[in-house]
Length: 451
Image (tube, rainbow, N blue to C red):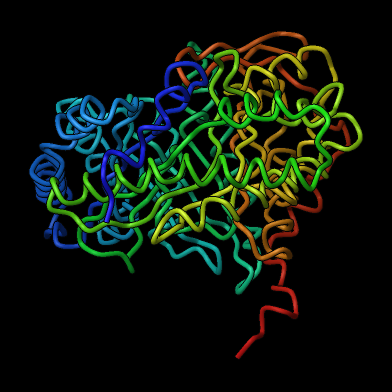
């Protein structure tokens, strides 16, 4: 049983160290909304989200007041829309816009699930659906999209990888007036999970209950603060400090998740342990790594430090929640982490180093601005590299890059809010177009054959 007394010790964390519940995300199944045409389906989808999520914002705000813990985002994830619109994929945008309209009317920050699962192959309706993504992201405000192009079990669908490089480029072009903002709402996954509460990659898996509540905690500022008082500790002792801190942070998330589920009449899903940074000073994963002894994030030793941090967070958090899931690790988005922003501006961290770091942390190359003239084939190759890391290591990896229209290395993109800002980083000039143009698929590794 949980009571408010269990989170009283977090008061100082909230007031001084940026502790918050990053998101309460309601997952909603849309499979019952399929009708004979796109217009009817869109209306049914709108009605269902409006009905199921009607109390999401007021309930989470009430919980925030009761427990004294900020709940930053209220979000919804839905069944991958490509499944809902399979009979009329060319009209999928109608459903996308209906979802965005519901999100705005309910006061929801983001709604995820304009998604497709094409990791083993791309059906005809999915190929059409992928082509609708740029226009839909350009014409909506709160809708997010994701596409899963690979898995450890099935390999990597290089045809889909090639297509997504083109989709990213077109999305950037359609939102050029906002520095390519549409790409900040688009994630390309390998090993996507069905219970992720974080955007832009959240969707409600077909194996989930009808309506669930998934919670994502935060707290990099808390971890950094604790480590600042342990300058003489060795790494074993530092890991123990991180574990104990992660336990306390996760207990707060567990309490909010269970109480929100009860009040909203939904099933409790998971608590995601990911340390989610913000552009605010004192709320940075990069600063944690520097507290461990690195002069600057990106220098040699960064990958090892991140591996230790990620492991300690999981070990501490898993004991504090009855059900851990989602991505659960340490996010390293460039534009959303002040330490990453400053390191990138100073040229102290590169895309290649970020890629190495994704071998040991959650997710992948996240919120990275690249030159606007980067070829689609190069973006596809970046996606392929990251998917290979996920496939071989049996972990979730992703790419969310923004080819900034009209901008080059040294320029900056600015999105505001939690999306922050980022310097445009250089990409390798080598040409991968022939490799990507071969198409087909990269077979799954031998260890995928487990039956």
